[in-house]
Length: 369
Ligand code: OSB
Ligand code: MG
Image 1 (cartoon, rainbow, N blue to C red):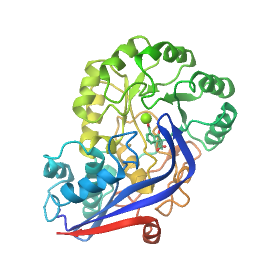
Image 2: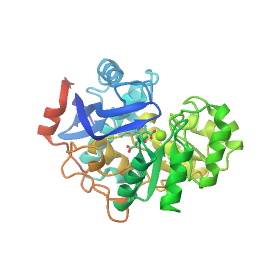
Image 3: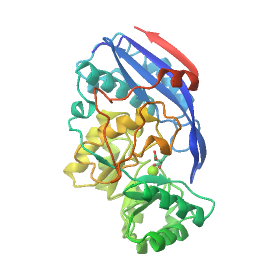
């Protein structure tokens, strides 16, 4: 495939309801939408970096800067046999994995469309229904949280994840267990604790949580390993796992027992498949995380989730939980049994609605080979 042109747009989409984590409250997503043109096909990508450098050091502005100044110029006019070779073009650029992932994933979509195949097949798997859970933000009261959990369970979602932080952990977990019994339940701290909080985290053991996600700092494998020795609940790492080497280190150190894969966090599908394969080889359960993506990123996530190692429900929920309307039409919906269908068709199987992209765009730029 030859990269003929790349179009970038900074798109702003308000969220249906604000989303609060231990690092702040989000009211909208503002991200770089990528179109890679190759031989008459267009592949789409969505950069998961946020406006603020809280989940990750990358931001919408840094992703724009690195894409326009370094990554796009090194792709234009180049020919690749396969999208897994694309990352080779920017080997010199350190970090900026979310920026790289948006372009790499758009290249995979373009390639799959040129081959007239669904993306999941090109990734090495086959279409299957994807088990879906939901990620529920920090609420103003336990009562409001319980109402939200009730609505999500009624929609069919297979597991509930709640965001926690010091002071919002034991009481919400206890209340959910009391009210909803033996549902699949987990918590995500987004790095809000330190090792000195080990007793408060061990107190959560009695709730039989599936896992506690990223309790400690994003770059702190050693303390996670220490913490895991004092917890019965498995630790799952999210922020910490930036690629296959860190994943192997984390497993060697026993810093986690479960890994969350987000292709944006790791630099694209290439490194995500490598982490998937590593975890399958070591019998480590994995699941697909989410970054409040529009339907474009959501479709990418569903295709990757078809790989056989993704055995736990993912944060891959329906469009209507996030945006009204989504950038794509028809939206992604959840089935009564809490699964989501991988979009049919070639590539990711969905297209953004041009008028909606135009209306949501703050800034666009076209780069021709
Ligand atoms: O830690 O998994 C996370 C959203 C933004 C940034 C980080 C995270 C999240 C979520 C939401 O938990 C997942 C989703 O519903 O897309
Ligand atoms: Mg997380």
